[in-house]
Amino acid sequence: MAEGKATPIVRRAASTPGRRRALKVAPRARAPLRANERKRFEGHVAEIFSRLGMELGSAGTKDTPRRHLQALWDLTLGYEGDPKVGTVFPRECRQCPEGEFEQTVEGPISFTSLCEHHGLPFDGHAWVGYLRNERIIGISKLTRIVRIYTRRFSLQERIAQEIVNALIALADPFGAAVYLEAKHSAPARAASTR
Ligand SMILES: [Zn+2]
Image 1: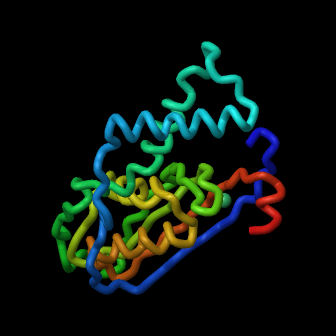
Image 2: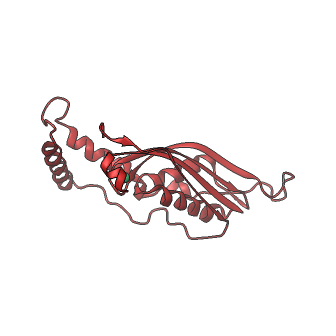
Image 3: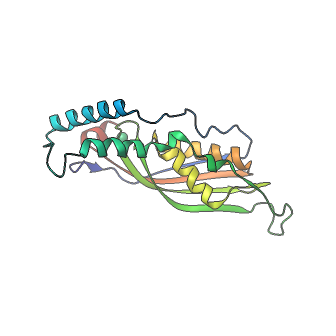
């Protein structure tokens, strides 16, 4: 990755008129890693890193396979969903003087995701907004929603669409929009063939 060439900042946005949909926050449950799995996976990581050239066993690298596996696990916690996301509040005033298109916008929300093409991290920021209808999603929930869909193997286009779908399912808004800016550092050769 140190040799990797950063691709230019890319921008993705998705916008959809409000309509009710079922929300799948946790499409598949994920069991914790068992001790024997952990040991086996750390062995695979050690084998790969060693073959790539890493000197395993030094003070700095002896725990690297364990840390690498743990980092991958943490970066994919989005597969476990987030039980706190399901809460929405009724809008305080349906006939507010500001008019029907009150908006809630939150951002930048920083995120790190794993690109499903390379399995490598990409970092970015998300801006999330919706036009309130009868239900309100707490501001902190917007960050949680972003975390659910970025802490996975994914793509920017899919993340944007999944967040919009979640906003619609939770808040049934008049409209929702997501804007993502992210930078993916991939090896130059791979970047040229994407
Ligand atoms: Zn990639």
